Image (cartoon, rainbow, N blue to C red; front, side):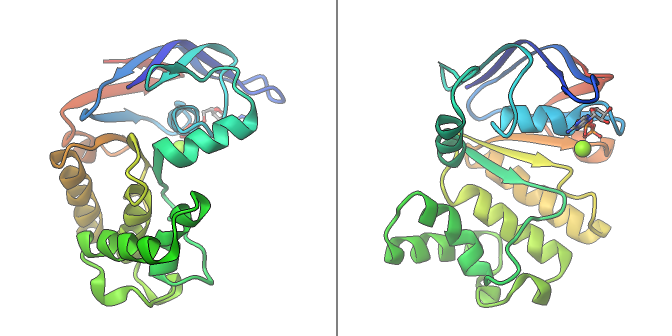
Length: 218
Ligand SMILES: Nc1ncnc2c1ncn2[C@@H]1O[C@H](COP(=O)(O)OP(=O)(O)O)[C@@H](O)[C@H]1O
Ligand SMILES: [Mg+2]
């Protein structure tokens, strides 16, 4: 489903080599965690896998298609169709309700309003937030905001959910809830890549990988 072959990333301006010859294969339904110290290249890897950035060297195959070298518009379209993101800082839109935030990716895909709202409501129900659909992000706790972000990530039925340090800003109880939601996604057949510096969180995944200085090992 996802495959990186000899993938390297050098940031142009700084010349920092953030990924070095990474080979990675993630199959449908896998639950993979990637742990590494700060600066080891975790977010860079997430940006590459999520089509938010491109490789300097190597290839990236997503669902059998070689996406290296695709133009930005094609990458943006694929990103919307195939990738669900969960970020450390939630990245919800402040002026929108929970329901509107979750429905937004469907708007971008041109899904009609009634279906959009129904699917967003169902996604919020699945994360236990049916009673918070009309709340704005600043009326929700950090844990609730991250659950909204998880609902938004899965509402498009993506090929893969990429979570970058999704529990880093949360208290232990909220963090545990977020991790069990990710476990639940995996149990229902979703492909999940969990990026974290927390080894306890990483241990929940079936497959554990480690990043050190841009080098990935199993
Ligand atoms: N946009 C960027 N431009 C230049 N260097 C960057 C950029 N983003 C990250 N880096 C550098 O790449 C390395 C890996 O960073 P990052 O992927 O954010 O690591 P992590 O998420 O594991 O903390 C670091 O040395 C960082 O300073
Ligand atoms: Mg990071």
